[in-house]
Amino acid sequence: MMWRNIVSNFLTLLIVLMVVLGGVVTWAKRQYDGPGPLMAGMCLRVEPGAKFRDISETLKEKGAISSAYIFRAGADYDKKAGKLKVGSYLIAPGASMAGIVDQITAGGPSSCGTELNYRIGVNGQQMILRALDPAVGDYVETAKFDPKLEPAPAGFAEQVAQSDVRLRVTLAEGVTSWQVVEALKSADFLTGEVAKLPPEGSLSPDSYEMKRGAKRADLIAEMTERQKAVLAESWAARAPGLPYKTPEEALVMASLVEKETGVAAERARVASVFVNRLAQGMRLQTDPAVIYGVTKGQGVLGRGLRQSELRRETPYNTYVIDGLPPGPICNPGTQAIRAALNPDSTKFLYFVADGTGGHAFAETITEHNRNVARWREIEKTQKQGASDGN
Image 1 (cartoon, one colour):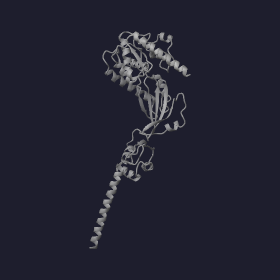
Image 2: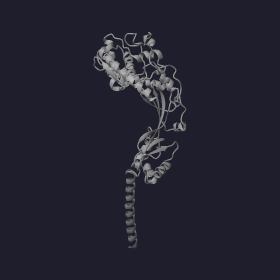
Image 3: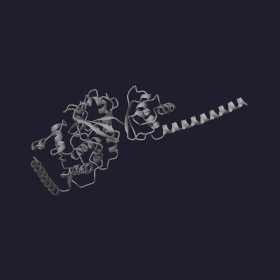
Image 4: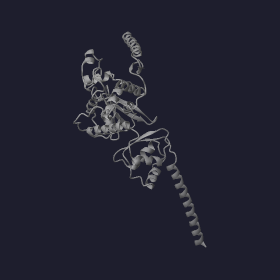
């Protein structure tokens, strides 16, 4: 009888322990899968050689998880504890332990930390360093400078040296190939040389994700391939009856459109003016092409055109030559290429600045002359205002 009681009590205790253990496991799973205690976003950096235990303790200290032990146990159970990936991760408020484990073991581009964007523009270049503020989920600019004209600010080199910094090169619409190649020489995170200047117009203005140590020549090749793809796609979808025999001629037109207006909504209208002029046998008379003939695309003219330059016969002086110039005058963006191949249907033959950053368009020379006179008055007022301000 005594042994029967002992066995009965043992079985009862075992059942109780199993129920308790089951409850603990259920509770731990809810802790692992449920919303976490993090109140504001945070950046978690996983350094090379980091251990899962260290990461779990950091997360516990920063209030992102309720238990470092449950975090590790859950990762072990999911067979992810040995798959930690180097990077910087934006941990969202309320993120579950399971979600955080998925983040830091999946890898991929860093979602937090610092980004260096080397922007190459028409009037210069800028290194722009930004760091993500996890509290607001947005980037905050920490440094901006022209590497050709200014020294890097204090601490810049140390920040950029971090292994998880995202590197990007952004090419603005309208830059010339010479400007691109010259600017890339100042990108210290790239290597190698560009042996040959790429043909004008052949580079696609876009943003390019880079790896530290990537070759400049490989970047140029990627820019070239993207531009080829854009031009081929746009050429295939072109409007009928255009005055271009080849995609290359369309690229020349796109470069003129790109340099004539910075207003996206005007590109197809500007293209229509040039198409209408070609259809009527008129000269294009576009100043940016004349400027390219003077500078050869090597920098910005920095002044107005002289009358002697407007009269000088060069392959790019569209006041003198008929038709299109022999090649592009810059690297046009996708929108300019599409505008050149699908211009608006208008009767406009003229346009001039209107003082707002855009242009006033006209069908007749009489109307155009009125627009020019209006622009001259605006210029006069602007100069008078600047003089009074001094």
